[in-house]
Length: 336
Image (cartoon, rainbow, N blue to C red; front, side, top):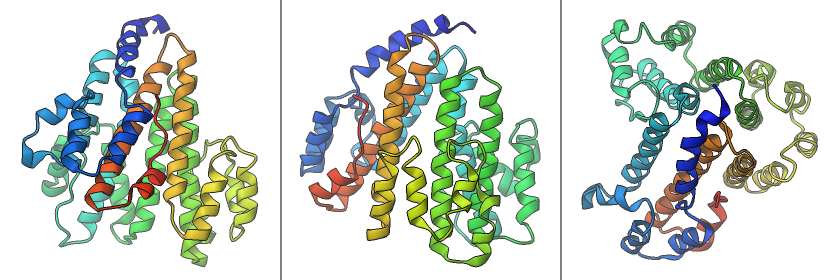
């Protein structure tokens, strides 16, 4: 499809970008001590119509942010001329839901999980499949074989950590095949970043376990296709300084080494997560150089996801009486 076929949706996005939350609004929201006043500030923004559709009792973190995510998804699938490319950003919810459902399936007696209804498969359909073993509801779906694969691998030897890592690998393999079938360089670059961040988290998770068996299997857990070669992780087992040095030579040199050093000193991933988000926003901003095509759409998706995530962080912190200075430390950059 020609890049100029995106002209109409990009025009609509440019208008929407003028309504994105800027740093001043974010700071007002952080500094506001009263929750009701927080909502009043938010009502002055484009989130106002979402808040006003909720009753007083429904005005909570989950409902506000879930409504915002659903509104974003609905707009994109309606406006973008190639919606299959937009689904790439929503398969993560399908695979997240599979993690929860399989843990529920293998650990009998665990209460029914709260699924995120933002994927390409309705959560009700997934629950129907797992509860009733109604294979007909998914047989035509391309994820059906993946579910079968997971069940066969873990039915006799369930391990929650290995399940998480295995499903992550299946997810990245799935979206890699999707993205590689498109002629979209910017989307491929986004995928490399996602793979790198997933591998860095896996490396650190395995390092923290200090279990010889898991360390020996690190290479199996890593996802191919990122900017950082898999061997860079394997060669740095039990050697954080060398790993930090390798990151200093990567595209993430301004961001991630600081976050990992912070973790080593404070045993907290909060700064690393924030810096990963900031890198994604920097990547999203580079889409502004494209006048046509999918790139500005991807930039908008990433910026709105970050914006909604920031709202969730601020609201959660306020409800839990977290000091303002701490909230500011946790909140990442916004697009505007």
